[in-house]
Length: 89
Image (tube, rainbow, N blue to C red):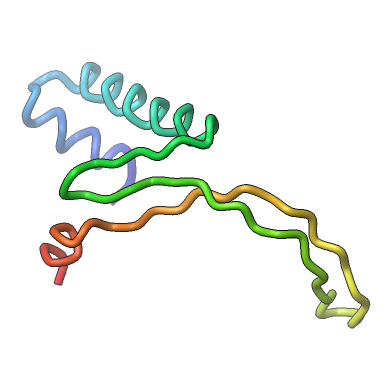
């Protein structure tokens, strides 16, 4: 399922596809803004979106074998809730 499929499913409940698409954009945009501020988004029964910091490290170029310095960075993380994991089993 992709984003437009999800919008179509929400539109079945609201009966207006445009409103469903706008709601989806607002929902996803809010999650992005919150994570950008390094806050956590907790959706009860679904899961938690958070940001983790990866430390700087030394990697290796597989083609040449030479060492490459990899910078530290922040990455999004999703941890599913127990109820969500049980529903998917």
